[in-house]
Image (cartoon, rainbow, N blue to C red; front, side, top):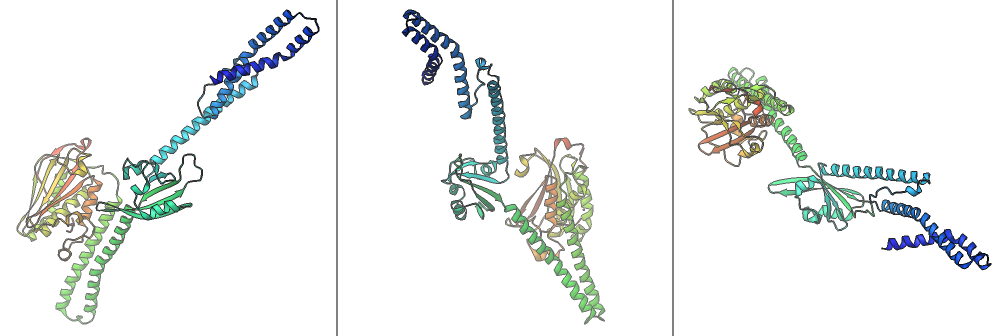
Length: 480
């Protein structure tokens, strides 16, 4: 309504302004008696009507142009105005056309930039929180929602991250600050570094502070593992080396002419040298497995691998009068794998069963197709080859089972060393199975024995032919 009144008033002013000169002439002529009054009135009406008729379209075009410019200023998306009566003003028409194209291009660029920024923020590997002046979360990204839940918007940061140092940093930050802290998630201690950044003043979006969280948990675990690994490896090498050096010094001095002592010392030195050789071989094997992240591309026969592993372990089994029994309960298909690495997995497991099992007992190796998979595999695969190595032994206490695959971890360190173990065998098993997308599951009953269950998932495209011939295994073992 207001715009119509304004348009009418504008039209009236324009008509009055344009008609003013001829009207003054008519009034003067009428006053001088040269023009009759009725003729003067008719002339005034004719001038007003003609002026209104010709000027109205132009004023409508100018009004449309004004409205168009206002909408552009308000960042709306108006249609290009109809300037048909202003087309004779070619420069104005071209200027409006250029303005419209420029505005459209700039708007499209801004929309694309905003969309790209949103995508970049959303896929950042670090959790991101954008806070207002009250420390309320006004925006997050995918990692933040994945880590801390989807209902964190509009909540205060201290509700999500109740860390005093972090909250103090957010309250007092001037430019950028880094804060390290940890959060306890159940039994897991997660470590983070937070980067707190003050947003420039007068932000139109009311953004005050940006907080990003980088998860250091895995990095620090790897650092600790490396430090522990170097310390353990050094210790494992130091003991036999010290023993060999001591025996050599004894042979060179007090026992130089003692033939009996020489024979005994040489035997001990040989055992210690073999222990170092085994340790180095296991370290090299573990390093090679960890370095090889490629997907195996060769079809392997698990039943044949088990047969070869049995043959490899026969001599050790005879020393304790242990009988290795392989029982293939269903047709086992070939699958993609690394034959040497998988051979070492089953050799390690069978040798462990012999080492830590009772003398005069059986070690059973059962192979079958299983559809009852561990949780780690069940979400991705429907079935797997399950190979179980079952012994009769003292068993393993439940508190030790989660740590069995850690490097150099031993349930009974003295017994393991006495039996010639390095503490790396099950670590080799774990890393090999990781490369094959497999899983190791350990079950044990004190006083009865243990079962080490290997799951190797079957992908339908890899299943080739079935083999059902029972058979046996081979290489250096893991240590419990």
